[in-house]
Image 1 (cartoon, rainbow, N blue to C red):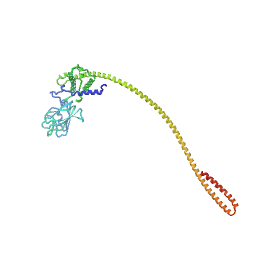
Image 2 (cartoon, one colour):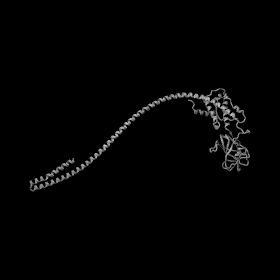
Image 3 (spheres, rainbow, N blue to C red):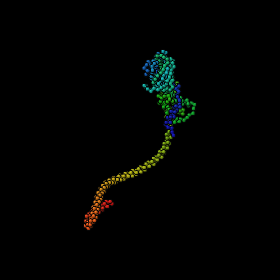
Image 4 (cartoon, helix red, strand yellow):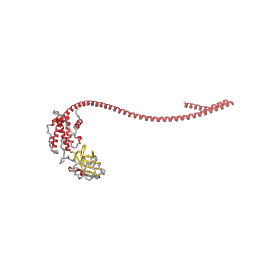
Length: 440
């Protein structure tokens, strides 16, 4: 597989980190007219005091080297600070403070903060320092160099017991953006030449390595002004030296000059770097061609895989089509079932209505049956009563007939008995028949 973009970038950045910190001895830094180190906190260069505590007097005097003028603060003040705007954006390396006033207390401990913007609440901590109790200049080197335009000096403690604590000068040393860019450019040229002196053989440039080299040079040129020291490490692969040997070297012209480098020299170096970028661009094109040929093979494999996936997709589509057909059949059956259900519901409603009518008729029959049963009971009771009455009458007639027999009126009595009792016998017989019928 060809190298991915992320791995390509990581190798380029890794080559920068492995290259180490670039030396600055080949660049002649900016100097004062008298040959002293350039002070970026000088009022003559444009630096100024922007803020200080309200008890401070003469805060702007610390930006000049007049020993008779100084910053004066009551030692009893709780907060003693001063904010200084440097003449330009500077990679701060060293700070120098001094107190030349004999009848005052020297500051002991102080904190240093910095920022690229002002006003701000997010000051960057640069260090905590302790000064000696001497009446001379003292230098303090920052552990971590950072790009700053504004610095804040917090004076925390002091020596002695004088009423006033004074500070005569504050000076800031470092490098500006142009000097830093020159250091990077010169170091980027010195390193491949130094590594190529011991190796006389000519090597073929690798497309991948030179592409990383082109990325290093491009990032170094663009971000070399406003980046911090950790990100300004420049590297260049020795394999690209043979391509660059035919181009004139402007570094030798730089080292022959005295004082600060002129602007045309900087332009020469920049043009030289543009030529290097052009060469690296051609190498990058070769790398892209190689990458293209590799990706053609990869895409062929992808096309083959895609063909197999297309066949599989067609099978899946066919199965889906069959499933849809089965679904249509099932939906048709569901519709038939639904119509049958509606028809059955209509018939069931009709049956329920018929059942309700039948129930009402049954209730009427029950009522008629109860009424007939009541009437039968009444008839049964009446027949029983008349039967008992007929039996009683017949019994009485029989007793009367026996009495008359005993009185010797046998023929006349018997004839009267049958004439008077025939209706009661008929009544008894009728009631008996009715009672028998009702008891069935």
